[in-house]
Length: 117
Image (cartoon, rainbow, N blue to C red; front, side, top):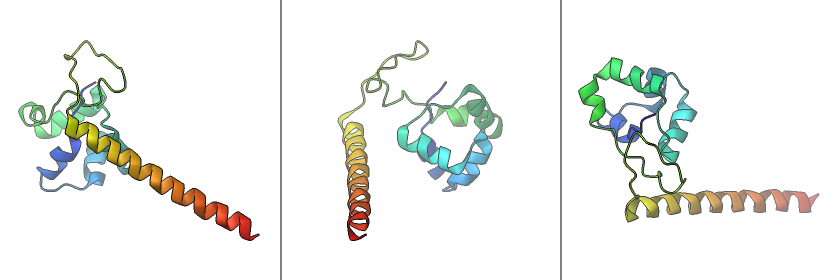
């Protein structure tokens, strides 16, 4: 499994839509969106699909150590362990806080609907 910065890859390849890259990787657009947001590694097959389409040298430019490697506690022997930088951690926290706020708002909406009955 290999981590590829898919968002940067898409943006630097003609601002490609997620649906287009998802088709190349053999997945769905919602799954690709989750892969970008959660910084998930590509499977070997997905990586090979990308390489067969764009070439090994092009794809290797976007291969990075997975920034969540230490956070989720997975140590992979195929790459050296790195710690995410502070800006990556801050982005993860901002995304989590936004999702918590969205869920809290939805809970409040649903609670209000139930109380009106």
